[in-house]
Image 1 (cartoon, rainbow, N blue to C red):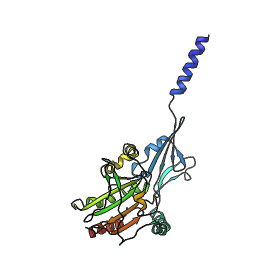
Image 2: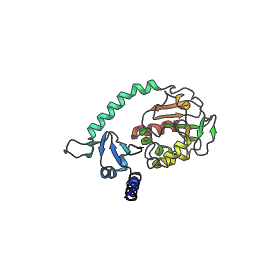
Image 3: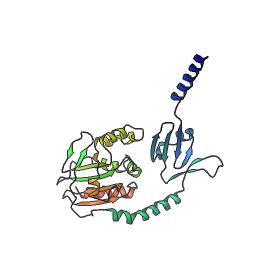
Image 4: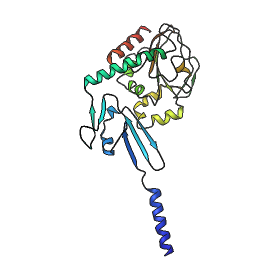
Amino acid sequence: MKKSCLILFITVLATTLFAAIPTRYYVGKIEVSESFWNQMPDSIDYISGEFNYDTLTIKSRELPFTHYIDSVSNHGRYILSMRSPEVIAELERAYSMMNRNLREKSLSVHVGEQAPQIQLLRYRDESVSVSLIIPGHCYLLSFWATWCGNCLQELKPEFIPSVVDRLSDESSFHFIPVCIDATADDLHSFFNSQLGSKWHYLSEITYLDIDRKANEKFSESGIMPLNVVIGKDGNILYIHSGSIKDKVSLAALYDVIKSGL
């Protein structure tokens, strides 16, 4: 009898220890099913996260303001919906107006001023650039972070990288993505994650600003996205706090880089 009880106890204990840890899925603040989560298109994956606990795994995903989870139209169900063009345009205007003054106040330098010299660590080979800005060269500095959804969005191939590609024949032009807050190990984990693999191309060209010292020379600490164009004379030609994704802004960025070559 004792032997049977012991075997039963061990069996229950083993089942408990090795049982699959449940996973719960959230889009924004709304909990969704695994099937709903898996059917969401990658094209609207704004930024995702995973949190592992002893008895539970939480996966979360945020949506760009172009989409939302409708949990009202169909009682007891939720659907992925896209906002109307009118609502999207209004949200963009409101967001732009709300942040314009904050962005201007956040900057530490201005167009026309001499760019401050910065020291950075290159992720690819961990070499240190003591004086990154060299006279006679034009630079686009793009400050980003693995936690910054807007940064990751504008660094998709169709946005800022498309401008950089048009300047690939300009040997004096340098695109310098600068990642703040992350160590080399942090970036390694990011680039090898499901989300970060989409930006793996950055692993060849990005630099690390672990303590934000470079970022703070251009703006308040942690302001992102932040893009700076420095001309051959070392002067700042352009500085923009906020995402660059629309055609007009991308064209303006291209023009100002060309003017600095």
